[in-house]
Image (tube, one colour):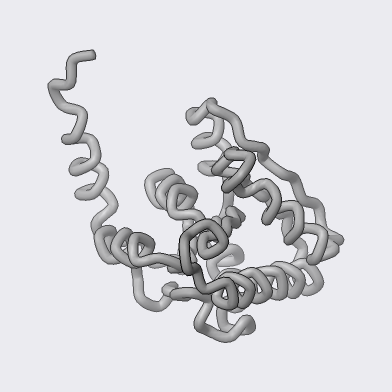
Length: 180
C-alpha cells in the first residue's frame, strides 16, 4: 500500500476530496484487516519531510488499528531495493502514481487511485482493465474489497494491462544513446 496526500499541498486544493479519499482508504484497510488474513506492507515512496508520505502513512495505520501483521517500508534512495520489495508483493494498492508505476512494471497486480489526471492517463496508456478501475475511490468499499481479494486469492484471474511491454519500450527509448 502506498498512501499520499495531494490537495493539501496545492493552492486551492479540495481538502474535502482528500479527506474523503483518506477516510475511505482507512475504512477499506480496516475491513480487509478484520475479514482477511493478510500481511500489509506500507511503502513510503516520497521521503520529503514537508510533502512526503510518512505522516499520512503513520496516521492511517493508527486509525486502522491493524490486527494482522504489517510492516512499513521507509523511504530510501536505493531504488533497486524498493523495486525488489514492490516486486515481491501479491497485490499493490496505491494513491501515489510512482508506486503504481513500480507495481505495473514489476508485474504485480495493482489498483491505482486516480486522484489526478496523470494517474488516469497512465492507466489509459498501459491499457489497464476497466473492471479494476476504482477512480478516486468512487466504487463502494465492498466492491473494491471484493475485487482486491479476488485478485489476491486467484492471481490467475487478474487481467493484465494490455500495453505494458510497449510502454516499457517507450520509456527505455528515452535513454538510448545518452552519454553521461
